[in-house]
Amino acid sequence: MPIIRRLPENLVNRIAAGEVVERPASALKELVENAIDAGARNVVVRLSEGGLALIEVTDDGCGMAPAEIALALQRHATSKLPESLVGEDGALENVATLGFRGEALPSIASVARVAIESRPQGAAEGWRRVVDHGAVTADGPAALPPGTRVRVEHLFAHVPARRKFLRSARAEWGACIDTVRRLAMARPDVGFTVEHDGRRALAVQPGDALETRVALLIARELAGNNVAVDLQRGDIRLTGVAGLPTYNRGVADHQYLFVNGRPVKDRLLVGAVRGAYSDMLARDRHAVLALFLDLPGSEVDVNVHPAKTEVRFRDPALVRGMVVSGLRHALSTGDQRAAQAPSQSAMAAWQAEPIAEIARDLAPTQASIFGGAGWPSASPAGSAGVSEAGRAWRGYEQAIMAPPTARAEAAHEPASATYPLGVARGQVASTYIVAEAEDGLIIVDQHAAHERLVLERLRAAGAGEGTSASQALLIPEVVELEEPDCDRLEDAATTLAGFGLVLERFGPVAMLVRAMPAALAKGDPQALLRDVADDLARNGDALLLGERLDLVLATMACHGSVRAGRVLSVAEMNALLREMEVTPRSGQCNHGRPTWVKLAHGDIEKLFGRK
Figure 1 (tube, rainbow, N blue to C red):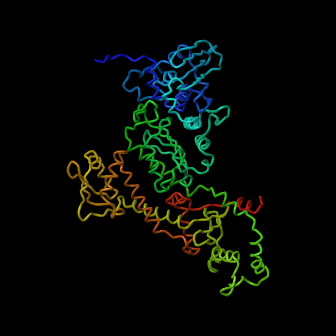
Figure 2 (figure 1 turned 180 degrees about the horizontal axis):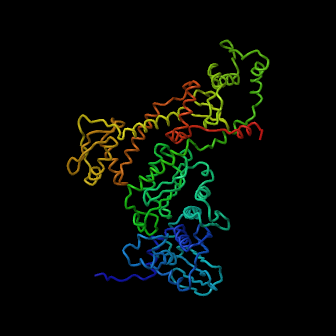
């Protein structure tokens, strides 16, 4: 019979390190969190070979006495939980610090060489303790300013099985800088400096405004292409910075989510962000944002995983709904802006000088303009005909200029300051509206703009009725599901009826569908109910059905909007511009593309060399 025995302390620490310290970025995260919890105003990080050879974190926090340094290197020793709560059932519901488990330092010290130097504020000298893969090798006085310096060298040097699974130094460095970036974003009151192999890679000063710090760490262009998010419901508050839908990325690595100041990677929050942008982004594009959710400790469990990057909410439906509504409200009140970033190659084409052949082709046209012989006429069939440049010039003149009556109507309309999108002056290629504003030239994609306007009208009409219209099925359909899925659907039946999906329980493992949403009347009840049941299991909310309705409405709007190639009168163009100015989210179409771009007077002057 096998004998049960207690494992040695160093082996226990190495086992724990497998959960806490997965890679250099994991160790760096724990050390920087300790520095923040110590009340540091400035944190300096030095790395070598992506953290594989060296991780050094220096802070100006409260520091530690010699006895505290020795205790900090023991398992489950922490200063993060208040003494009055230790041993109480609610201790973990009142965690106000990033760390609290007391596992990080002993776990790191068991798989690396760790040197801790610290000096408390007001102490005459500091103290240094060195632990090499679990064994104490040095312990004595040290000279350093108040604060703490932790130096980690040769991570996993004695654990080759772990070392061989690490990625390249460049990949590990990318994970390390992303870790510091997230922590720096969460604490704009703390300054951060990061050096890698002697090169400074990041430097932010303490006391930055949230929007400034986020823009510095994500992308400077975000500063002019974002809306502020601020929503509070009871004790729960959502704040942050959300990029305009037209300012997006091809991957989701620029979405930063925080719960009570803690960087997290939570599927519920990621899904809520996707749902909030569902009708404003293409499927392969992702929003750029930083969201901060603050709620009482009793409403969230942070003790889900040793790495502390996962959380569990007491009321996930409330949290998801708050994120979705907060983002949509911010984006709907963010006027009609779109990310204004014209293609550099397209702008350069405006400045390209014509080659000699084009200049010769334009000569007859120029002569007609200044000499009065009129436009060159078409040559008889079989002849060379009008030159390519001549045809291009005439096509341009016919496309950009409206009929004479419309030109006269537009010419008498002033570019008033009360019209942010200006007054229509013409149409290019029967697709783009050219408008003159007080401070520049506006070019509008008529189809994309009208697509958004139609969608918002349809959505407003549905909201005005209180419930979505439904289509009763001639023969109710029975959908067989697992019993837990049926339980969730039955609990959500009232909510689903508001979307137009009417159903009732039909035995232990089946649901009876009596009516479908009118917009999905031709849909498959079996597939729809399974998708909704899956979404309820994941998020506890029927948002997926709402997103499906939005997608159908978006398709209807696309087919019901003004098509590219349709000639519009000046009155129609101006009516479109005026409606855009009062419609939320009109800066982007249903697929996340901008509906209008602007050339300011300064930009136009640069094109002509006036600036």
